Length: 187
Image 1 (tube, rainbow, N blue to C red):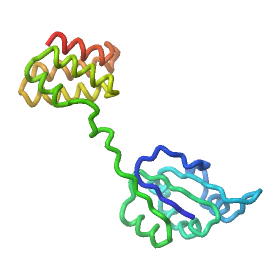
Image 2 (cartoon, one colour):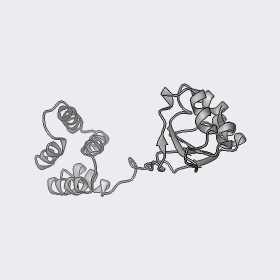
Image 3 (cartoon, one colour):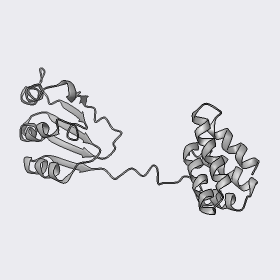
């Protein structure tokens, strides 16, 4: 059986992960055609193999993997149309996971933070930042959001200050969370 999972997935499927870079096609063919020592089927996981430099080799091997008594799971971030058609023709099962929306889904009131910056309201900005940080938002995302708002407002001084703050924190000049709080309180 051959299954292709498209999209970010955090499950390991309880499978043995194969390092396809170290295996030849003959090795994988042997795994596919050989019965398990104590009976039963095994499950193998190959990550980003079809998108790799040897992707065509795996596509040519798809029919053998579908006919195998073992389960082969290819975990891919993206799958283009041509490989999808080849795999479907071979009889592979293709599962598409919804695109991760981690970067797009806000766990706090981002409009409150940006409007507090626009109004130069220290208290609301600080409270919004602390709420966002407690909700698990990354300080880098908050700095980017505030820098975007400062640019939108046309305040190049604030934008420059936020950008320098971000880069300075990555150079070791301080923790970005603390720098953002200090920025909010001195606004």
